[in-house]
Image 1 (tube, rainbow, N blue to C red):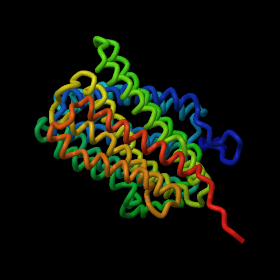
Image 2: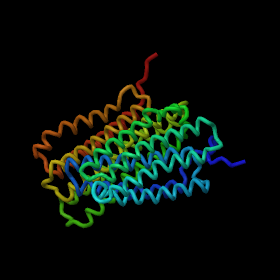
Image 3: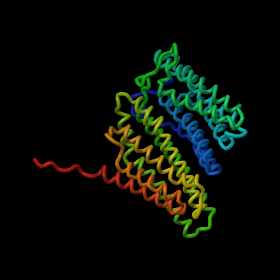
Image 4: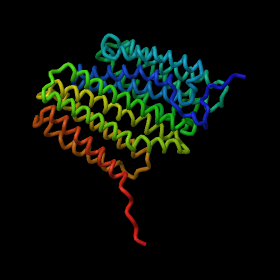
Length: 394
């Protein structure tokens, strides 16, 4: 009898993230670095759009792999080998990012499709002796990946100016898959009950990716600062970037990550929370960190003047991050509304838009203001959630 490759559930170590998964994540440290450097090198409306496409592709590869390793045991040799092959594809894809809309479009698309299609095909083989519902789930995912792959490859073969149109269709298909429950004629549709994920593992995996993004932000800040003359303005920009990263960590990890962890771990339908809160919403959080890292570097390098797109990064990064966290906490923690502290932070940054684009603030001052807003949000939420409930007189 073939030994199952599924994770064992219910034990003390069942939801633990394995060392092989952390090793796999190193590829995505490189990918995040490539994305931030790519946006910095092409800081324009088209650069923003292209980076958004590439971020979604990188995230989709990573989060779908996290779903697979949630079901399959990465300590088993076949699963380990599959992850090593995925690492090869991830490195090729990451190395192609700077020229994905140039000379390496086909390499990027081929690596992406190979991972997105190869992963569910491997899973189909891995669960061949399991229940029909589980086999059907991976078969449907493979069909959707193959359909989207046609457009990814077509875009890779197309002229660079037409590539984004093909890839837009491909990305829409990829994003629609989980939302449409991977419905396939003749194979039916999945349900969130089929996605019996280990909530503890999913929450920890996504938290680790947030750490990857924040770590890359610190690396960018440190590398930029080390190559500059250490003037008063440079020290202020360096301090602002560091405090901003700490505030981002606090906003996500102080209460939100653990509350989400507890909610999905004890949910009767963890697949529903994993799909919305962790698969879709978390990309906003990751994108906010990456864009904020670009903004911090711009504030250090161009403290007095920057472009329209640069100002957009200084405002857009914190907006994406606060919006992502607000939605995550709203969806995953049974809140009647998003956190008031996050909504106020968003309103303050939105109110800065006319003054920022009117050049009333220098890039350095603007990034210091957005850092103060992040600190305000972090402190407000921390104090509000730890305030003792009012006493009720008998």
